[in-house]
Image (tube, rainbow, N blue to C red; front, side, top):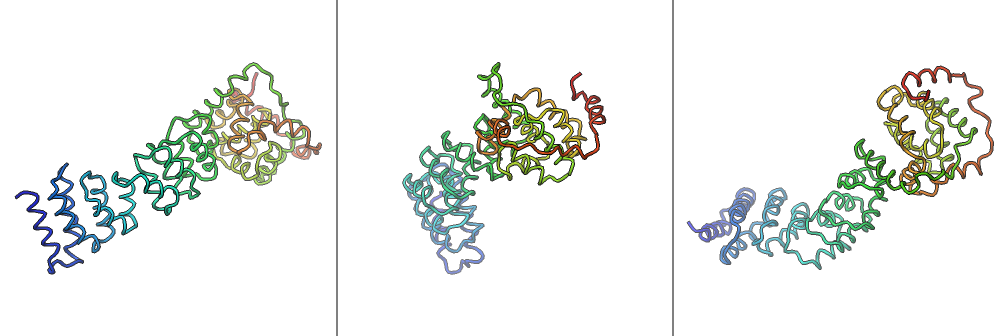
Length: 375
């Protein structure tokens, strides 16, 4: 039987009063859609008959059925525009499927949605595979985090550098957005603000990019001095008191970053970010090792993590560490000049470790056994 005859019979069935909406009509819509998308091209008569049938059934279809129909029709070049518009008018998930996949939607309509459409519409639009730079820029500038996440997750979206940087800056405070941006690959120095959301392989790439960015300064003396003795003592004393909140607050004061950012550095489980902060501020490696042993036993007792963090002192220059911390905190000036500023502004403080038991010999023995101290 020719397809046109099949569509004609199905159309007549759809129009029959004996077709109960709650039972046969949604099934009939799915079956007819399956028949339609089975062929790559259709005659004008076939398209007309399918449209006459579909428009009678769409209003009675439940959302689950309509979403399946929308998935199939929106990818079909011959799908009748009136049918797709009627599905889109129903809203919800079916309309989002049409917005994401239908290539018949005029560019002006897509632009209007990107600029001022509803959030769910903009999210659906952000997932399209045919976005151009203008529409992508409009989506990147929207305030909704759902839109930013959908755009970042779309590997086909042509993000200009300024749009990428805008999303990265928002990714500092949005873990899901940060991970979507990191998953796009091609990580470079612009991705350093996302360091805390990165996995171990991604962190290695980010540190490599920081080192490459600092190659121009190789051989030049560092303008910032080592962290002063009093600040070292205050940090070690705070670690001995086992109060992470107070320790983070002191860290933020010394290095010159926001206290909430300092708390994230302290709470990061691997200890990598805290180690980079120690390097950036000029804290001696032996003191950093003691702080880990005293206040961060989970890091210190895991041999691989402890050794990795101690080796960062040898492989990561202070300038590059400051670049990473500045990116994480959102203010590279604070991190780059933290030690110098601290030397000017910090009043001498009593050594918090003077009243504490002397554990340095045991710690030196422990570090020597691990090869963490130089002979």
